Image (cartoon, rainbow, N blue to C red; front, top):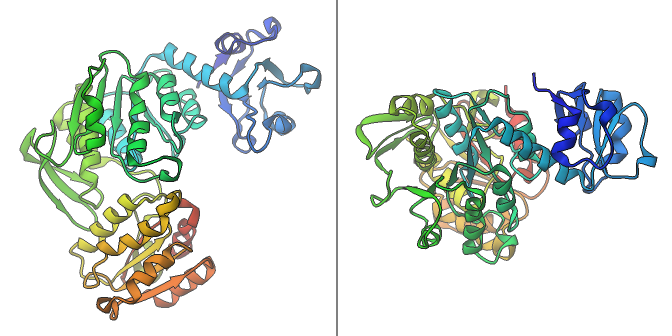
Length: 460
C-alpha cells in the first residue's frame, strides 16, 4: 500500500504552515474528486469552474485525513490536517515530481494527435514482460491526471508509461518538464484540437515540446514519415533519435502487413521472417506497434518478449473494442475520440476488411476542428466506398455536411443513408429497428457526441 508521512508531503510542496505536530501522520492515496476519495486520503481542492475548497466537508466525511489548503487558515474546518500552500494545483504537481524522483523509474512519455493511447497500451504490455510497469489509466493524461498517475505508482515500479495529452500550446512542455522522461514518443501529427492552433505545423511544434523535459542522452522515438516533425530534428539535440513509419528510410518499418476484421499481422525490417500479430484491426495500428517496439528495444526487452507483449496487449475501453450487440450484431466501438485522420483510417480499415456480412458506418461529428470543420466532415466522403458499405448513419450537426455530400452521389443510391441531427434516442431506435442478424457496425466519433451511450444501449 502507498503511504506518505505528512512531513514528507509538506517538505515536497513547501508547506507554509508548521506541521510538526502531524509529522508522523500518514496518507495512503491522493484525490481531487470527493466521489472517488478513499479513507486516509490526501484531498486536493483544485480551483477551476468550481472551487474544490467548497467540498472539504464531503472529503472529511469520505475519510480524508489531510488536504492542501490555499484559503485563509481562519476558514479551516476541524477534523482534518491542512497543508497550507499558495496554489493547490502547483502543490499537486510538486508532490508528484518529488515522489517520481524518489522512486526513479525509467519514464516513457507518449504524445501524438492520434494513437497515443493505443501506443501507451502496447508499450506497457511489452514492458510488462520484463519490468514492473505502471501506466496512465484511462484519459488521465493532462496537467491534473498525469500527477495523479505518478502518485498512484507502486513504489517498486521500474518503468512508468505516461500518456501526455494537450489542446493548447505549452501544455506538453509542462508535462514533460514535470515527468522528465528517459524516452519520448511522438506518434503522429493530425488535426485534433486544430482550432487552438494556427496550422498542423503549430500542432507539430506543440507535440515536439515533449523533448523539453527529456533527459540528456535520452531517446526520442518519432514518426519519420511526418515531415513537420523531421525538420525539427535538423538542429543538434541532447537526445538520441529513432524513427519509425511506413517508409523504408526509417529505422524501423514494416515489410509485410495483412489486416482482417479482428487482427493485424505484420513483420518488420528488423526480423522480416517473424510475424507479429496484433489483436485488433487496422493497418494504421502498425505504426503504433512500431513505436512501442522501439521503446521496448530502447529498454533492452528481447524481440521475443516484444512480440509476446504486442500479441497480448489490451486496449483502454471504448477504443477499437468489439462487443456483441442487439440481434447478434458485432459492434466495433471506437467512439471515444475522432479526428479527420483517425476517422478516415478507421473507416478505411473497416470497409476494406474481408468480412462479407452487411456493414454499417455509424459516424458522429468531430470536435475542435475550428473554421475548417465543415470541410473536414465533407472530405470523409473520400474514403467511403458505396460498394463496400450497406448502411451509413450520420449523427450531429456537422455530419450534415457529409450527408449532403453523399446523398447526391449516384453511387450511393443503393446505400441506406440516414442522418439524425441531435436526438440520441431517435438514433438508438433507428438502429434497433434496422440492425439485422449478424450485421457489423463501426461506431466512430468524438466523445462529446456520446455515441458510447448508443453502444451501451445496443450491447447484450
